[in-house]
Structure formats: C-alpha cells, structure tokens
Image (cartoon, rainbow, N blue to C red; front, side, top):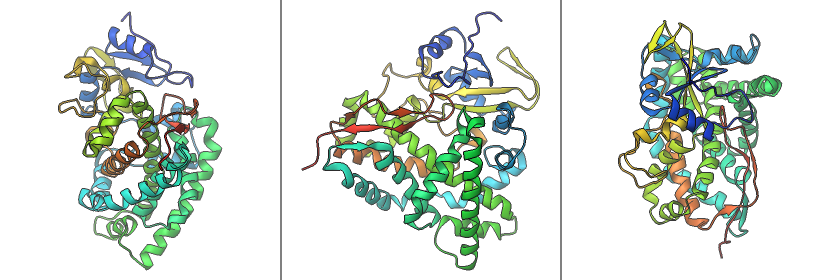
Length: 397
C-alpha cells in the first residue's frame, strides 16, 4: 500500500511527538517502523490494546535489539510485562492484593509530608534541579515506603533502578553491562529483604506478597523475586520521568499551572491529562497470536505492533473539544500511559496517587516556575523523560 509513512523509532534522534508523526497520522492510521507497525490514531490504538488476537509483545524486545542470551534477557522474559495467558492471570491475581486502592489511598498523608519536606529543601532558594532534588527522591522514597525498606537506602535503590530502567531505552544493547550489574545488585538486595520478612513479617508490600508466596496457589520464590525487582525499578523510573514531563508540560501552559495551585482537587485530572499529551511510555507493544487482518493491514503471526501513546492521545479525531491541554475537562478520552486490556499496569493506583499529591503542592509553592536552561533529556522514543531539569521560581519568604 502506497503512502504509508516510515518512522525510525530506533534512531535516538527521532521524536515520537514530532511533526513527522503528526503528518503521518493525517495520512494513515498506521506507520511502518524498525520495531514492526505503529498505530497513530486513537480509535484503532485503544481498540488494539483490548484485542484478544494480540498478546503483550515485550518479550521480543531483547531479540529486537540483538540480545539473545544472558541474565537480563532471562529475567526480562519472566517479568509480568512479558508473560501472557494463564501464567499472567495467575500472577496478577496473586500480586493484586498488594496494590489495593484502599491501602494506597491511606498513605496519601505520608506522600504529602514527603513532598512538602522535599520542597522545603529548595523553596527558599528559588532554584532546583528537579530530577535530583525532587522527582527521583520522591519516587524512590515512596517505593521504599511501600516495600518497607529503610528510607536511607533510597539513593542506592534509585541508582539500581535508574540503570535497570535503561531496559526500556532504545540504547539497551549499549547499556547492557550497566543494566546487568544493576539487576544483580537489586536482585541480591531484594532476596535479603525477602529472607528478612519471612523471619519477621511487617505491614508492608513485601510481607503481603510473601503471604501470597506461601498460599495454596503459590508464587514461587523466583516469581516473588522477579516481581519485586521489576516493581522496584519500574515504579521508581516511570514515576520520576512522568513527574519531569508533567513540569515540562505545565511550563507550556502556565494558566493550567495556576489553576492547579488554586484547585488542588484537580491533581488527579492533571495526572491523566499530562499522561495523555506527554507520556513517559511512548509506545505500548503487542504481538499477533495468529495471522490477523487489522482493518485491512495483514499482520502475520508473531508480528509486532506498537501503539504510539502521544500520537493516539493527541488525535483530534477523538477529542471532545479542540483544547490541546486542560486539567478541568470532564469527557476527554482515556490515555494509554498505563497500557490497556489484561496488561493494564498493576501499580497504576500508586503512580496516580503519588503524582496527584505532588503536582498541586509544587504548583502552589513554585507558582511562577520557569526553565533555567535546556536541561538534559532521554531520547523521545522508548521510555523518555529528563535526566537533568533545572528550574527557577520566586523563592518562598
């Protein structure tokens, strides 16, 4: 079929939010890429995430990058992100109790206290390197809180999580030595935590999952370890990145930043809207179980399809209003930042809650925030976000 755009998602310089993607979306509902086909429009993208003719396609990510053996590849194949079918459903059922919304909501005051404590550290100065001084410690210390880890361990956990987070990047093969060193370090640490909680259970997520490990249906020790290591890095890395992207978005919409400061109850909507227009997870992967006719596109068994999160989230064909970004909407279509279908992110309520707490507090205490230089950013493809993000604002008196 002629006129189908090609998007080079494997190029570190490629930007999935660029005009090339937008113009491609105007031409066709899909594009070709080095990683299979990419869906560019909302209706087709959201439908595919629920389409039972497809399964999670992340298991092929190592092979797509020329990584065919080794500890990281083996571990990657065992994560909840990569498995499907009965094994996936069984693990979600066993892991689910640790992520009950009621338990996470009860931690909201602790999230608020942590956010304010971090902001206290730079509010009087009027400048902040947002990643190092807020987004990373906030995400990491909440993770330590959830897992029952000592708060002083957060810098080490964050370091491992940061390196392991490169698993989602398009430079994964070059970063493999750092990724595998982080996997070894974090796995050894988590194994020690599991052993400790088996001897002395506490009121924390690890102890809850150990109870599932010891129940009749049983998480194996390996499944328990893999799940906790994956949670530790995915929960920290994605939240840190998404907070930075939220600030980037609000800098372009200062009226919405002011509205959030005035109406903190809009924090939850702010999270959804930021993830619609500026998601850290820039594509969601699916694999065809059999040969599939997808709206006339013939996808062979094993074919990979990427749903481009920003492209479908900003597709005006599906928008109720022609407003590019607004946190007080009522009927905006859902985003795909947490995936979809049976693979919807298990920890979504944690991320939604901690970000909905942090953003209104930041808006109130950094009312006139502005960028203080260009910062340093990951490629806008794969998982994206800031590496360094310097900001300035009027100091608190």
